[in-house]
Image (cartoon, rainbow, N blue to C red; front, side, top):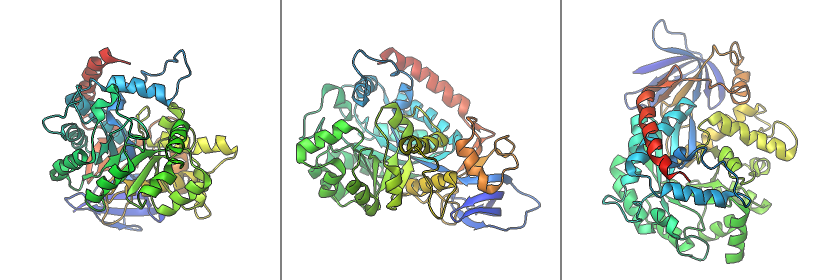
Length: 455
């Protein structure tokens, strides 16, 4: 049996002192005992948290970071960024996808993520033809996850149309083309890779790219309890297009097509009216929020305050990966709301007034649900996924437990994550990933190749 003694650890019921954590050879926590005597021997740490879940990722976009920050002649928006992304994506190879994903995952681990949900839609070769193994690019991303040690939920994407009303795909979208049966074949091909570190679900890309009938066909054949993710209501133009098409807003239209439940994660859901906020919260589905990407693309701000008041569940993702840090996503989730409402400490409740603790615990719960894996808490039966903060850093030195997450999330820009364990295996030690140099070298070679196709 493996063990770690934590002077302070964040458990589901809050901070506890002198916690003995034990896990088996399969990376599953078998006992979590607060108030334990300090052992004479064995590993110990001062500040231990459950690792965060990154519930929305397009791994290949990590190589695009910083290349689209130039104003065009006309006003720029999500739609102009999307065109640049398409141009970049059309040449990337499976080998390059794996190299970029490995770099991303090592960075996410170093910044406190221990699991990721990959919304994966680069399914075809640069000519738009299926690979000999249709699941090849998905397998490459899973290989990168295994090589770096991060847990993964792979979500092959259903992407058939360019707009509402089943408009045909453009030439630039041919790499992403799939129908329900092709997605199900990829899911089946990935079945042998499912294990304690790997889950496989599916993702209708959006209501623009998948029809209601296709989504229902996918749901009917997908194995039960698998996670389902979808982009929705990210942009005002998307909302207007949906209303023009069917007379309903996107969340309302989705709920007319399928029954939303805890299997679902609605990514972004930026532009909701009050009735949609209430309906989404009541459904038990997770709102997947990606504040750094939503800000970078000019999407808007999710109605977090009324959603939380209605009992809604949320998680965070890094989406296009202009940031790889859980702290930055949570910080800007709260700061966006402060700017919107012109008041402080929005993400809190009557039972949890500490904003850092509310955000971390809430994102853990929503992220674990969206990932469909037993993660997100230091508790028996969950995966041994944890991070150790640098207790000697000036921002945390001598901090009381009640102040730890407030300082971690809202104070300074140093990375305070010192060590990271995933599935009982240490993958980050003293701020460095165990394979950081080799991964970075491969990534640098890859981006040098890709930059000749820069947007």
